[in-house]
Length: 279
Picture 1 (tube, helix red, strand yellow):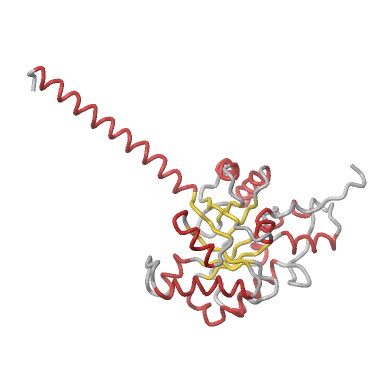
Picture 2 (cartoon, helix red, strand yellow; picture 1 turned 90 degrees about the vertical axis):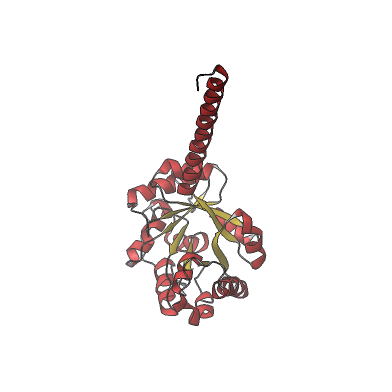
């Protein structure tokens, strides 16, 4: 309709975080829009789809973003490290957030912010003719302003190298969320899988404290069992669970129950034969 004014879709995650609430996310390894929609329908604020470890192509990611949007749910795309175009393409598909793994230094963080934020925070290349810009239906300056306001970057701290400049990284203008990855971090400090290692625990706590100090959001992976502790520590964005874990648990539970039935049936038959004197 002529004269219609378009605006960028607001971020559900940012709305909750800015209101002082906790936003919950879940991770998808499966390249299927139906898996994404099921996760979105369950009530999560955000789905996290992956291109760092998972062989998803852009068309798969686009469909997952669309599936989440139907239910008013945000999508974060974790990219593989690459050129600026690898960072902005998910945003132009209307992903709400871009997650960049393995931030190694202050210079590294600055480069990511430059590529993911428009002026005055960065110099992200401008198009506006894609889903996030309502296909050229949002005014140029409004598009830049709304994208900086309603889309967010997530920089992951997963390596010991970043610790020397950690506060400077978190304090950067244009950084929206700092995300602690304990798995890779444990490997980086020479203690793979030791989630109770003192340096890991200290770093997780320090990231939350520095995020609060500099007005940034802190995110990490967690579980229902430690969610309250993470929130008390200062984390307001928590990713819990994954589609592959859910499927594993579901199918293994079915097989476990079937094996119990088989065992019970065999025991019953043996008992009957004993009573009949045939054993």
